[in-house]
Image 1 (cartoon, rainbow, N blue to C red):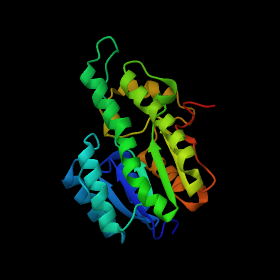
Image 2: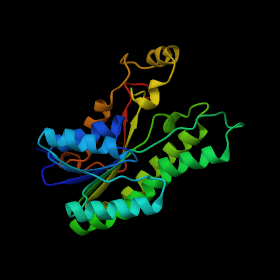
Image 3: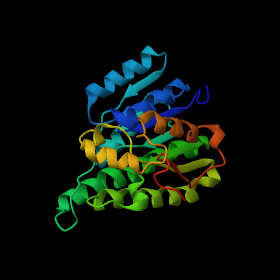
Image 4: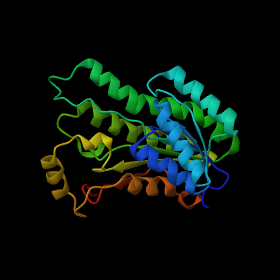
Length: 247
C-alpha cells in the first residue's frame, strides 16, 4: 500500500469529499485522524474504516476556532505520534450578491475556508519538519479560479487558498514537504444537493465529460498527491473538474 506507516489528518471529514478522502487514505495504509464538528458522524467513519481493516481516530473540532484546532492537532499527534499528511477540506458557503452580503457571512466563509488552513498548517508543520517528510493538500475550487456570481466570499476564500498553497510550497520545499491544491469542479455532495435540478442540468452542459463529479474522483487525486509518487510535484493546482475549466 502506498501510504503504509503514514499518518493523515483530514478536516471536514464527516461527509462528502472529506469522508471519501479519509476512506481512500486508510485503504492505502495510512492511519487517519478524522476531524469535523459532528462527533457522531466521525465515530461512524472511524467504525467504517476499522471494518475495512484500517486505523482511524476521531478528533472533533470547529476549524474556525483556533483553540479547538490547536487542541485537536495536539491530541492527534499524541495519539498517532506524528502527522505526515494534512488534507484541508473543511468548507462552508454563505451565498449572496455582494451588495447584499452581510459582513458576518463574509467573515464566516473566510475564517472556515481560508484562515483554518493557515492554522492547521501552522500547527502540523513542526511534526513534518521533524521527520523531514510531509504532504499538504488543500481543497480549493474551480470557482476560486474563475469566480462565481453570488459567491464573492467563497471564491475569494478558495482563491486565497491557492495563494497560500504556493507560498507554503516555497517555504518548506527544502525539508521534503510538498504543498499542493486540488480544485474540484461540480461535485455531488451535500453542499450541492440543495441546488435545483435545472441548475444541475445547466452545469452539466458546461462539463465536457458530461457528468457531475463524485467525492471519490477527488479522493483519488488527494491520495496520489499524498504519496511518494508525487514527490516532485509542489505548488501545483490539480483540476478535478471534468474539463469545466481548462488552461
